[in-house]
Length: 69
Image (cartoon, rainbow, N blue to C red; front, side):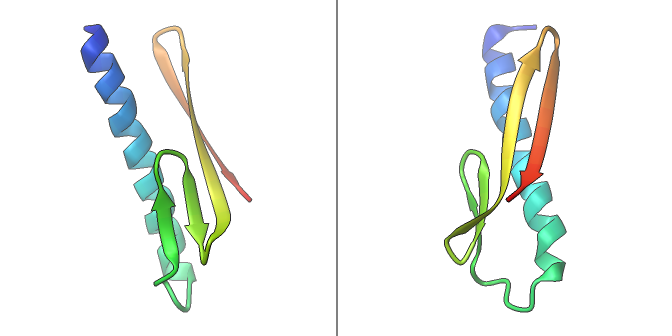
């Protein structure tokens, strides 16, 4: 795989993971306005960290971890 493609693919997957967290949490909130996706790895609600996203490369695989705060 081209190194440039690999680097951009990682960013795209990080954004997709963040959007997945955002979309999963959104329907659970009575007031979704304070929900924010803070690039590159945090979801916040009213300024407080709600979840963290970690991407780690392991050989040819990319591992995505999502943890709630």
